[in-house]
Image (cartoon, rainbow, N blue to C red):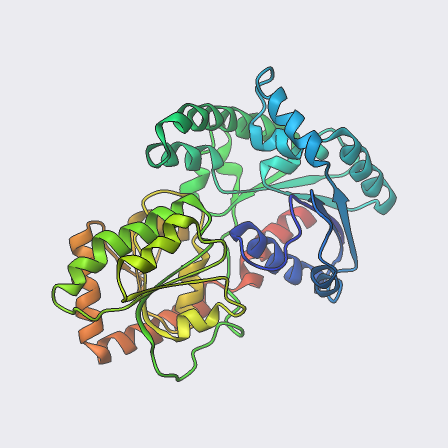
Length: 389
């Protein structure tokens, strides 16, 4: 099958969740299908990134976006009701270029990731199309309203409302729809939302493997540290949960790992000499392998948290929230420990850090669970079968 895949950015390196999802899905699809990858970008593509992608993808093309036109598009949002992030990526010249690429390639199927790319192909009717909502962006913006400065809340409320309307509207332009979890599917405001196929993320268990090494940190939290839900979670761990743990275990250490840490995140390292903020890591596996346990008490955000799957695959016990568990869509008993209050997280962490044998057993169970339920090939198989029919 010939697949034309449209993304809102180049899916490498893997410092963002949407890039990681697209990258691994592309690797799986390219094993059996001819893939044309088209990426939108407002900057010159990194030759190393393109060279890496071309190792397994037949055709790779980057369509450049004009930054000054992006600014004009955002201003136009004052007069039209499209979501701002859709407007940010929508440019007429780029749309014509994408259409020409589609017609030249003559795909059997078009795949768009995120609603922000849908404007580019929604009026191309010669070929069947799928959209990967990834997650319910409208709900994500709504959850974040309480965490942003007061002057931003009106904007977040407006964007959430626009996205909710647009997620419903864009449904009609695609033949197939998929999303990362049932939790997110239920937040898409469309009467036929149950037709949306749940395609969870997977994890490369051959890459994320446990390695016997001396542990440098007790706790780790990982992710893109420029992403607001991760910033809020890192602050919660460092300022609310860790002090509770340190009443019993004063030298408990915390690693906050991930690209683009904000000033707020960087400042957490100055709050205590037991906190380390690493910033970008060339190999995120080291964050998991150097730590005893992953803690992710997230209360805002949407979609599936890849950090949980990666940590589990590295045999790391994981403590997280019901929000994250809902995103994972696990319907069988799992080794993941769910807590809600700061006190629950602290007490559970203390128990597992002090009971090393129990913690090690939980880590082994976690890896086996990841292998059994979260391979990339198994996650894509149902969608492939649907579009082939």
